[in-house]
Figure 1 (cartoon, rainbow, N blue to C red):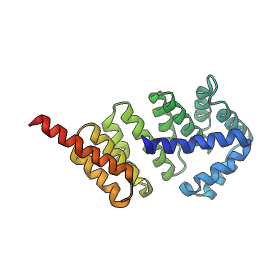
Figure 2 (tube, helix red, strand yellow; figure 1 turned 30 degrees about the vertical axis):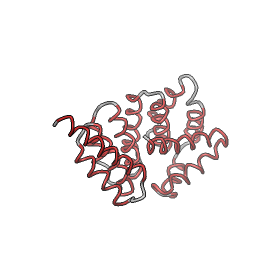
Figure 3 (tube, rainbow, N blue to C red; figure 1 turned 30 degrees about the horizontal axis):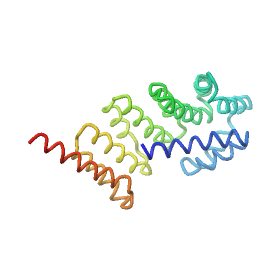
Figure 4 (tube, rainbow, N blue to C red; figure 1 turned 135 degrees about the vertical axis):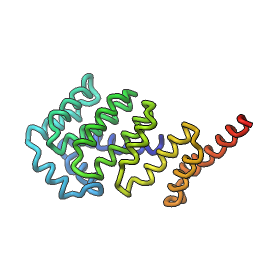
Length: 212
């Protein structure tokens, strides 16, 4: 869960920055997402947004922690799927739903994010988070299928790590080890995955001892 929390903290930072700086969040979000789908594309998304959408987006994010705030944010995302704000709202709403342990709602928001994504990279970001939520809901097959649909090379390590977590949980140790080894081949200093691999070896040894 550590990597998941780190990703969600990035979204939380965007929300907090909005509360402190008002409309300046547009610039902050643009910078944060530039590496994912480019400043030019993001700028075009913002330009296409209407003034009312911009104001509604601000209100939705500022009030998301209030009573009915998540419901209103969800409604905004569904009503503005043709704007660049929908994807951001869906990601923040999903994060909030996860905090509330409402994984069904998180799944809905992330599916919306995937459907409304302006680029493959953004869709893949949502898919990585969606796979975690699907796994939380016990849909192992669905989570693995979602991960297999991620095509952006920049997410390959995260995809393999999540696969390793899933395979470890269902005691498919060989597949889990293969997934973790792929991560370490690209990130040899990844201490978290090294620890997971060590725990995997211990778990596999225990299971082997019980079955003997």
